[in-house]
Image (cartoon, rainbow, N blue to C red; front, side, top):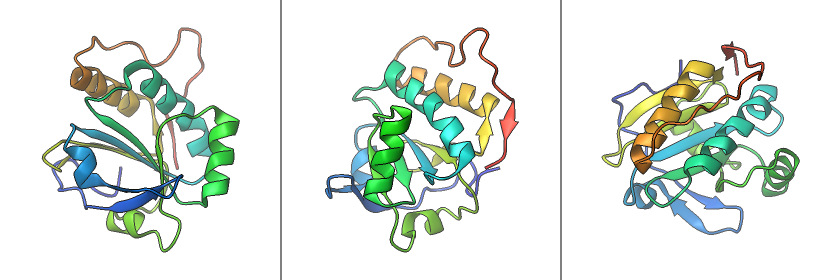
Length: 164
């Protein structure tokens, strides 16, 4: 169970991307919903989860919603994590005081939030949950006007749950 439940108003944040540019949740939500994924680079469950998040990004990424990774690590460590796992989605840094992570009441990572344009959390998930990722995939497909595609490939061994 994630720190903030569905129906909760998502706390606003303004964090810098890897290039140092400030990005606010309020500005992101002007273009549609957002999938926000909090993580730490050294977290084994985060390392397991992110390739599936990248699949979502590659399948549905576009302008009708936003993907945001929020790293609790330095820019250099985050870049190394992205390079190692082949992650291309936009990243923000929450590495000095963890203001966004604290506002969301995080106690473990990865924690994912689907935030509607009205600023309310629609879905939240903590750790790796196969069923939650499938629900998020359906939400992303709906938001982009696409038919949902399977997130998990035939023959791929994927556990139902891994705690963060």
